[in-house]
Image 1 (cartoon, rainbow, N blue to C red):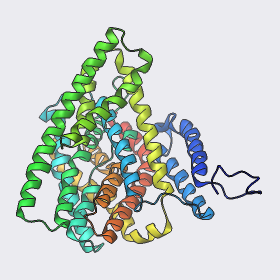
Image 2: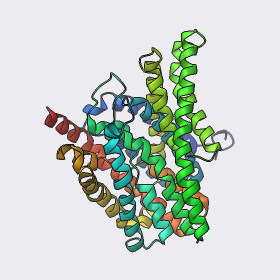
Image 3: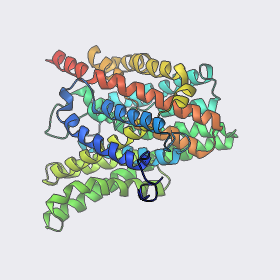
Length: 425
């Protein structure tokens, strides 16, 4: 029965329409999110845990009512597009927050995480995928690429505050700058997995290097920075000449990132890298202008709203069948990645940077896996280049690993951050 059915036609009470039920749960989640986000850094858990619990409760209720709903593998295109939007907004917001000039010295630890830790993490996951999960090499590379980047959406709970709004510790900068760049840099590895899965020749691999590595990365960063600078310049000029109202400043980052991302994808470059570079350039240009507060507030609201929607959706699509498909191996992989692989690689890679061991371990422990990983997994599944059973296993393994990360990092973030700050004093 649909929500348009009259009681006169179908008298008596009936099961609620899943869509209407979802609207009610979404409204409840928004109301709960308001106090949850208020001073959330002082709480013992992150807002993401609350969203996941609400989403999981919705999944249980839908299963009890036997109502139709989206499925993680069957509706991968819907999940892909929602998570894509959440990630690009978070990437732009992350770029806005960073107030540091580009230099080898200032960005050295970030470069080491991207050039050393990320590829080695992919290799470790590929090995686990082939020998532990029974995946083909191509599917295992996709799994490694999907789980390798830290997440800009969830890492926002740990990252750099907007200029003048709080702590600017080195670990916070490293985590935010890494999350801003490695989501885009996972793309070449995802494509490599799909190339391998499609049984390529040597020409395909050469094309991958030229197009998916060199061209797409360079043009993504360049186009994003250029467009971000240009849009900021136009926005500042409009504000100074009274062409736009101050109360609408919060919409600027949303419009800017959609233009930057769309234009970059049109020319075949990586929009994720462009979104971060665009936010960085936009923030550098409007730094010190009265536009800054409205822009940062707007970016933060959009980022939090999309985080809420994405994690609610993820929780609502969890099923016993999907969790059984992933099995205990997915939980073990998530725990090993978060508690062993990432921390060990990070502590060793940052050995010569001068960071104290405590801060290196902190950076290693907070390699949050999240919405970006879900995007990559569902996008790979939607490509049709993976065998259906392997694609489903990759998606559900990623989903379980992300849930493990949300719970572990959500509980540990606040106390460990406070401990690190106390240790710096």
